[in-house]
Length: 414
Image 1: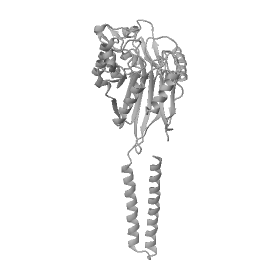
Image 2 (image 1 turned 30 degrees about the vertical axis):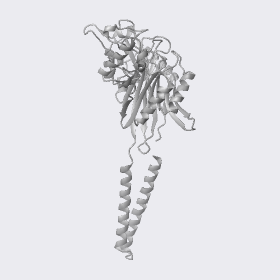
Image 3 (image 1 turned 90 degrees about the vertical axis):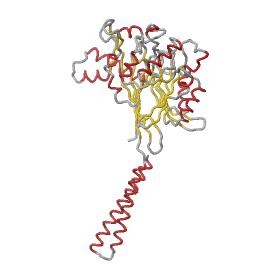
Image 4 (image 1 turned 180 degrees about the vertical axis):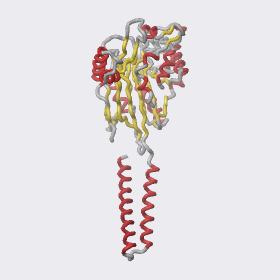
C-alpha cells in the first residue's frame, strides 16, 4: 500500500508540474508570441492525459476491507444459574437479563463468536448442571438475540449427554440461526469448513478440544468431535486454503483449569497453528483469564508469520466462585485486508473487562454481567446509578482483569 501511495504522489507531482508549465506557456503566448498555440494545446492535452492516468490508478486499486470480531468465553450453565432464569408464569427460561449491561459490545460486530460449554440436549433429558451439563435450549435463542453468530462446540463437555445430546445441541443452535463449529452429526458435517464473508474477507472458523472428560467418543462416530490432533488440524487448514479463505480463526479448548498463565503445551500448539497460517487463536477451558499476545513464529523454511492468541477468555457466565473465575472480558479484534496485496492482518485488539455478579438466592436478576468500565465512568462522573461499594469492586476487578490479560494491542499504521 505504501508503494501505491508513493506512486500516486509522484503522478500528482508530475501533474502539478505540467499544470504549472501549461500556465507558463499561456503567459508566454499572451506576452511573448514566439510560442505557437499548438504548443499550448499539446501541453494541455498532456496534462489531461496525466489526470486520466491518475483516475485510472484510483479506479484499479481495490480499497482495504475491515472487519471486527467480538469474542467471549465459556457459557457454563450451572443448575443455580439456569434455575434463576425460570419464569413460573410463562414456564420458560430467559437468560437475557444477564446481558443487559453488555449488549452494546455486540452491536457493531461483523462476527461474534463464543464457546458453548454446556450442551443443550432438550427438556426430555432433564436439565442439569455440573458434572454433566444440559442447559435449557432457550439459551440459544437468547444468545442469538444478543447478537451471537457462531458458537464453538468442541469442548470437554460436548458429550455430557452422549451423541444424541451433542446432536440436539447443534439442532437447537440451527433453530436459533447460530452457526457452529467443532462437533458434527455426520462425516459430511465434519468435512465442511465453516466459512463466513466478513465485509469481503473470506474467513474460516475451526474448533478443537483436548478431550471429553473421559467420556468415550463412539467408535462408529469418531467424526462427532474435533480433537486436538495435528493431522486433523493440518488437513482442515489445507482444505480451508483450497477453498480460498483469506483468514483462519481457530477456537482451542486447552490448558489447565484455574491456571492464570498458559502452559508449555499451549505455547507449542499456538506456534504450530500460527506457523500453519492460523491468524487468530481463541482459547477456552481454564475458566479464568489468561494472557493475550501477538506472536511471531519462524517456520522450518525460515519464514516469519504473525498471529494473535488469547490463551483463555475465562467464563462468559457461570456459578463458579473460585478465585478469578468471575473475571472475564469481551474481546474486540479488528482485522484489515490490504486491497492491493490481499494480506489480512490483525490491526487492533481491545477488550471490555467484565465481572460476573452473583446475588443472593431469590434475588431479581441474580446473575449479571457487569461492565466494569461503565460502572467506573458513571460513578466518577457523579451519577448515582452505582454505590460506592460497587464502584470499589469495579476498580478492583478491572485491575485484576487487565493484569491477567495484559495490554491491549494496536498495530494500526496511521
